Length: 379
Image (cartoon, rainbow, N blue to C red; front, side):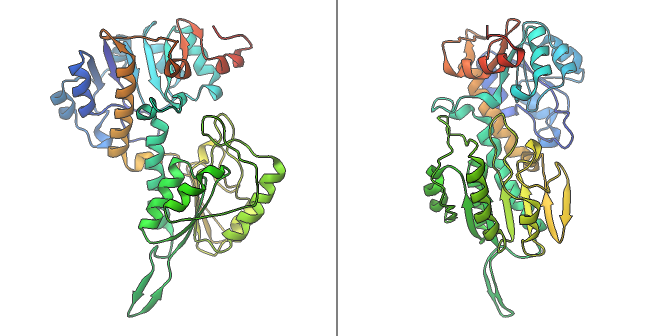
C-alpha cells in the first residue's frame, strides 16, 4: 500500500500530516510512503529527514495523487485535489462533511473512501486517534502566548523594588481541550484565571487546574452523550451572558473556545460586553472560523475597538508546527494501523470507529447524518 503526503496549501499553514518518525514505523509494517518535496520544511522537517526515514520524495503533486492508495493531509481539500486522486483510493483529512456538501459529492462521485478525522468517535479506543484534541491542545497553548504578547501588562504577580505588579486577570470561555490547556498555561504564567462552560461536569476539571469556575446559576447541563457541548436555551444563554458581562468588566484577557459540532459558534461576547472591558484588554477568539464567540471577531484579523484588541486566529496550531505535526502524525498512524489488514486498508463497518469516521465508500455516502444532506437514505 502506498500513502501519499502532500504539502498543505491553506494560507498560513505550516504543519505537515505525517512526520519522519511515523514513516519509520509505517515502513516497518510494509507500507510505502511518498511525500511531496518540501512538504515538511515549514514545520522543521527536511526532505533529507524523510529520505532517511525511508520515504520517497516527488515534486509532482499530480503524479503523487494519481499513484496513491491513501492520501493523508491535515486541512479540508479542494475539489480539484480530490478529482486528481485515482478512483478507489482513500482520502484521510479533516473534512467537516456537514458543511462541505460539494466536497462530499466529489468524493462520492470519484469513488473515494473519505475518512473524516474530525468525526472520530470519542471513545476510549479512539483517544489515540483524536486529532481534534491534539490540535486543540496546541491551539490552547498558542492562544495564551498570543494574548500575552498583545497584552500591555505582565501576566504574573511581581514584588519588585519598584513596587507591586498585580497579576493579569484571565477568563476562559469554554473548557474543552483547548480551554483547559489555556487555563493551565495561563496559570503557569502567573495569571489569576476564571473559566466558564455550559457543561457542569467540567467544574471539577477547571478547579483542579487552579482556576475559579464561573457559576451562572443555570441548572441546564448542555452536554451530549459524546461529551460535546450543545446549545442551551435562548433564555439560559441570555442569563449566562449577563453573568459573563459582569466578570468581563474586570478581565484583562478573554480566551473563547466554545464550539458546537455542525453548528455556528455560540455568541458569548457581544460588542457591548467587549467594550466594557478595561482599556488595553485582549480577546482571543478560537471559534473565529465558525463565526466567532465574540460579535466583533473577524476571522484571521486583528481588530481594535475602543481600546480592546480582538484577535480571530484561524491557524493557531501552526504557531507551533513542529509539535502540532508530531501529534497529528501519531494520531493518524494509530488510525492507519487500526485499519491495516495484511498490508491493505480494511473498512469494516461493524467497527464503531469506521462507522463514525468514513463518509463515502464505493461511490456512496455511507454516513447517515451526512447522507441526509442529499435527501436520501445512507447506503
